[in-house]
Length: 174
Image 1 (cartoon, rainbow, N blue to C red):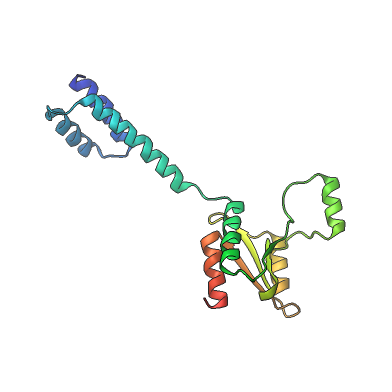
Image 2 (tube, rainbow, N blue to C red):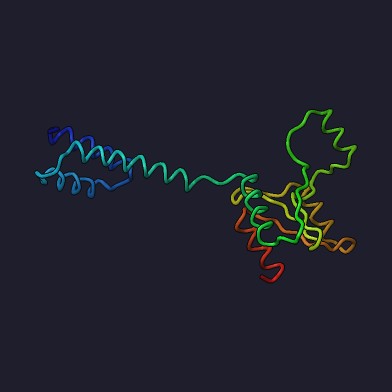
């Protein structure tokens, strides 16, 4: 069995990492030391596992899905819910060589065009991440153009899958 001093030091470090206040750390350490039926090695192994699980869960919660993932999930949901309504992507982003970029511009690619279009609803959808996504200047110009009197289409800035889903359901009334 590991000594009180070694156990106290190791458990104290684990509790510090989990931001437990000093007063509470002392109480927890003392209660484990006083419990003679407890296997301290197993207890520390278990606490280390809890710490790893806690850090893994925390990392997962702080992870924001990519714009690609959010948009892909949205398109899958949309096509399953609105089976007879066409939605398609406009591939106008990404990195390309200068020659490819020039070729695409000649073919009609225009910077700022929204990511998705629903012709039946005259709806443009620009996808961004839930956190940190903002429209570029060219995207703002495009948005204002399609919303203007000449065109009069609808436009949604979807900040992630759930936000996009909610806006579509609100727009079409279900």
